[in-house]
Length: 196
Image 1 (cartoon, rainbow, N blue to C red):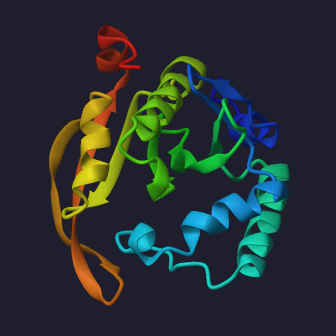
Image 2: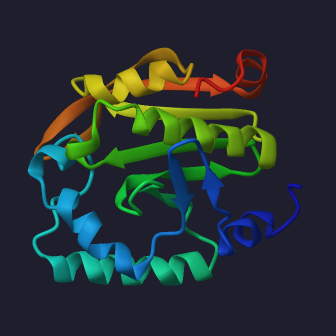
Image 3: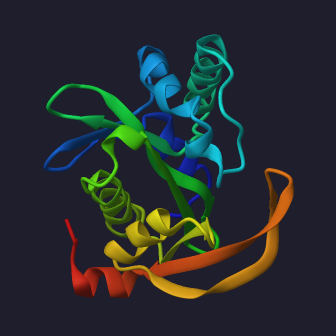
């Protein structure tokens, strides 16, 4: 599996992932309005490394840029889409992958209008299933600013374990922030089974 180019080959045609309520698929140009709906919100980005999108054109340009990253097999994020309506409500995927160490870091963002319904956990659980069964990774970790309790709850819900806090680890929105680190190992995930 871990031969040269396996990662880019896998993500050049990023596979769809289906859950009970969600479809995780490639982000499309037509998703720009749905993405802008939450990406313009300062509350969504206050704990993230990126700033709110200033206008829909910015979002369209970003989504267009992602198409090139997908074609090169260098973008590892899925759109989170509601099966019931086809609406894109966020993203979930890998922000970093190491084939050598069989490790990945995951991240997710969700439209605030759809929080509190278990969608982030459902999407993250599906990505973990992909990581451990399809990609044969050994470890997946996630990080959040220590004040981001809702993100931390998602990590806990899918069975990730708290490992510690990196003090003043990232400079976000004008200040150094403490970053909580969670992880789950392949053997732990396979033993527990999917939480969703």
